[in-house]
Image 1 (cartoon, helix red, strand yellow):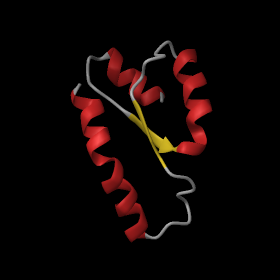
Image 2 (tube, rainbow, N blue to C red; image 1 turned 90 degrees about the vertical axis):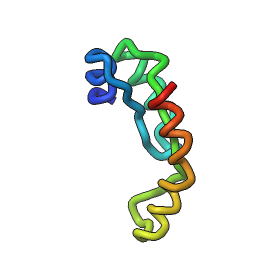
Image 3 (cartoon, rainbow, N blue to C red; image 1 turned 180 degrees about the horizontal axis):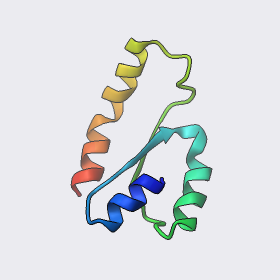
Length: 72
C-alpha cells in the first residue's frame, strides 16, 4: 500500500491488489496512510498454494476490474 500511496502522490494511477483475507487490513492501512479512497481489488483467498494455471485464472478474473481502477 505504501507503493500505491507513493504513486498517487506523484500523480500516477495505482491500484492495490490482494486476496480478500486482507480487506479489513487494507481499509485500516489506507486510512492510516491518508488515502482512504485508495483503489483496491481483491481476489479469492488463499493464493500461496495455487498452481500457475490457478493464478492466471485469478488474474484473468480481476483484470478488467484492475484496468478500470487504474483508468478511472
